[in-house]
Length: 402
Image (cartoon, rainbow, N blue to C red; front, side, top):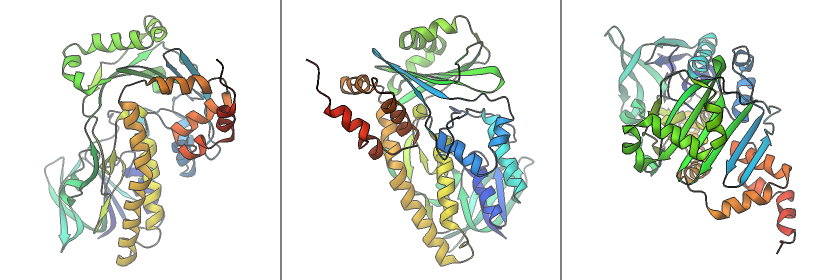
């Protein structure tokens, strides 16, 4: 019998297994895929995620790959252009956007090195129960064998379509319809000078981020209701969105080379699930999934991992204490991530209200405010800290030109 079975070994499951194994628990980590394997991702790590990797002793492994450092963010909409330095989270103001076939194996290897038993090619087909409590999993291997394993806690880190969530009956406590669809590809000879670039206009959004192998990810976002039309000629729609939203970027692409096929999805689901119950918990996209337009998926997964493992602490062998810890975790997920969720959906509307443009134009005159604005978007400072800052108060008090 295991203390914990973690289902899913990507950016939520692997660090969960790693931290629990480091605490001394007996952990089984199951993954459907065989690594290395790519997956749909915006790749970007906000500074708090970089701080987590450093805290876990894994940042140097990311730096040792050919993933380029990112020091700044650039944003353009209407007649407003903002460029900011990344403010530090726990001393880290440089970030990265590693490919998932690079990041995920590093995390899974760290879990195994910590003592977790890692099994790839395993598909969970059901949950074991003792009364109303989840007590283990049933799974099938790539070779067709059927097995069961028991544990005090089963953690579902198996993504948006979580099998653990489905079998556990985890309800969605917040849900909104999909708002965007996205198409993206990778380009060479497209330098970004160490910047994450964002461009917006009404009905379109474009993101640019450097990643491994000298390649640059370019993503274009469209309203969800246009997905059927866009997919009929996705390449033309993709290139048109870039040229119309970011003409300068379109010119740069004419000198670059597209080196991978065009990828896309319309499955930008938005929800927060109840993230724990008797004998089970959810982390990452299994607990909380939102539109990828804000590139918060990996960062939020790392934050949830820390919350869950901190709440469990040394209490996993005490059923009463474990149940209380899981309840606290579920409450904290809802309270903490609802703010990020609503903020992301606001961006995913793909609208550029005049009021927001006016606000951004006003703060563009103060570099400290610009830096803090993007720090708020990255989770380095809170919404309250930004809007109650001394610098913003001074801006409000300046006389308005007439």
